Image 1 (cartoon, rainbow, N blue to C red):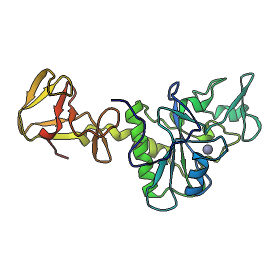
Image 2 (cartoon, protein in one colour):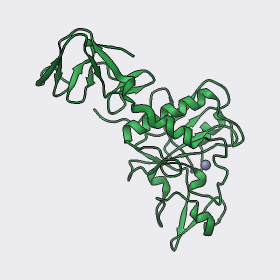
Image 3 (spheres, rainbow, N blue to C red):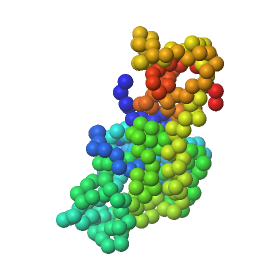
Image 4 (spheres, protein in one colour):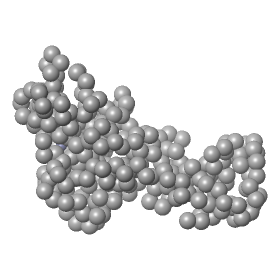
Length: 268
Ligand SMILES: [Zn+2]
């Protein structure tokens, strides 16, 4: 099964403005679009400016609507930065980033590195002075959890969860502005794999724990009817997902093997 890198719940609108594949993931970068949802979506996906991002969230109403433009395994073009003799240069402000401003940059940014190559970028419609609406915020958290679960990235504000300002503090100091609570977002987004969300009871036992997710695979042990077990599958929007984020209707990962899911009933 291949990892697709596309998150359910989004409107998928693939952009060609991207790098295929990646050389790692250092951080997720949050932006504010300074524009409406429909206009920003069009601009990010199709038209000529050579900028793009992975996802855009609609903060105009409480629809929770959002668009994904690129697989999280590819890289987009949202964080322009140039280097001259080891000194970072802001394309937005057209001047170097030095002194106290240089110290504000995320710690993993090293001379010569194009931050676009190692980041996932997320935009939200509206202005920096606009607070998050709850539906847009919850949709953002779901996408961040999806990224966390698939890539293993743990969000640390200022390091692995940053704003555009942490890449270009000279040209983009107000992206995304003061109303993004990075501590709260990181805490929520990191909590996706709490095991209390995955408690199941064996309803039709004995349930065989198999080495692989297949009825022909070796049985390692059995679990009796009525026993409670913890599932290592990924819970996303109330659904059981496998390690690639694909909805699983067949097999549940119980740590040392796999159990056929129809034998189980969710207990929480
Ligand atoms: Zn930005």
